Length: 347
Length: 166
Image (cartoon, rainbow over all chains, first blue to last red; front, side):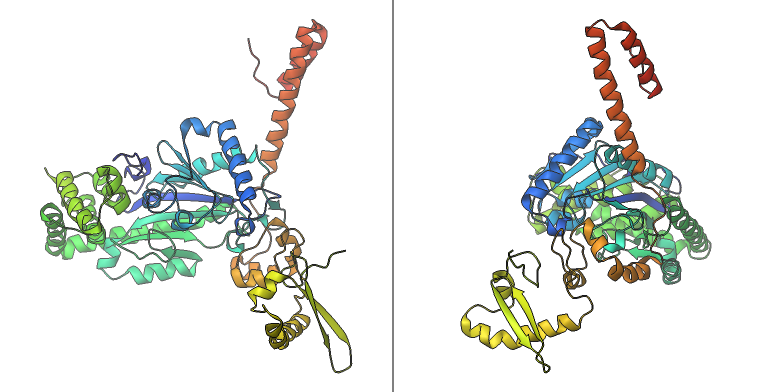
């Protein structure tokens, strides 16, 4: 059981630019050490070597003073889901066997997986649409670790990664968007197709194959080679600005033409959350997302955008268990979740 | 010299299968115990039964332009990469350069990296090493009371961007 609290990463604070639509921005780098086989071909001693090297480099560069390096314990299922729910680790990483490590900075805006699909995968997370911050966080780690270790690199193919889909910059820039306006006005398909047509990927918030819940979407670059980091970020930022604009227009339309219907939906959602005695994480996510829309539209004034946004993470199974400090059966968890949410939303 | 398995390219081949084509040209394939087992050839009977399959595999390999392309560093074959979609090590990019270029072009619309390179990191690492070395030399010079040398080293350190200590 993770000895954790209700404190969430500052990237969930809903204080960044465009926070009414954009939950967070992420920049991830994939790197491998030269002269060590990639994870698919690693022997236990190779895994150990990479872990030792990274542990040493984190200490040497001062990152260990600003965060914690988790190894072995707590990284496997089910405990590791705590980190997955907080977007600090991938589901594949948690379910994989073998020696692995996870560095998480104290404010949870920087994390590093060791021995995932690549030797190193680290990310910077920022609140709202803020690529400069997310890039600065991940870029600092890239440069500092890169000054201590030798990355696998080729002048032609760039940073060499286990899968050719990541080769080149090794950079994935992504944005988590909350687009209820476009979903309600049924414009979402068009927008997502548009993003796809310019080479961006659209997925659910928990990555590949995950469903889209609560009108939450993740948009990221597909190409990692042939464009510089700045160019990749520029393309995705421009598209995001257009989508944000579109979402604002959709919300305006809704408030103008269907105000009562929207208010009804928002207050019913809040009503269920405040009254429910049993609630699943899927239902809670959907309702919280609607309440979030209500808060950002000024329909609900007594709640803060940051409270509702962080609840999206805190109500998830592993986080709820960590907060409550005990392992629970699913049925019991749904009951405790309802109680937890009621306490949080009482005014 | 030991013969390596023609399938995985890693283990020692424990059996060889010889194939004569119509013209009487012989081709041989070496197979290790593990690959033989993975392909279901365990006993002698199985082996005989499976010889046809092995020969078919062999023929396919001969016909395949990718034949023999096995990464010397990690033993990954191009066929295996195509199956699992992951490369085994950095050298695979070199070994399969020609073969994966079309794939990379399809994925990214380019086969030339632009953007960050690790050179800066390496350069910084080298600078750091230089400074560490100079500092050590300076310590020695001071200990030996060679102040002329110490002053010169201090200048070099300053030049290398080291923060002077009081």
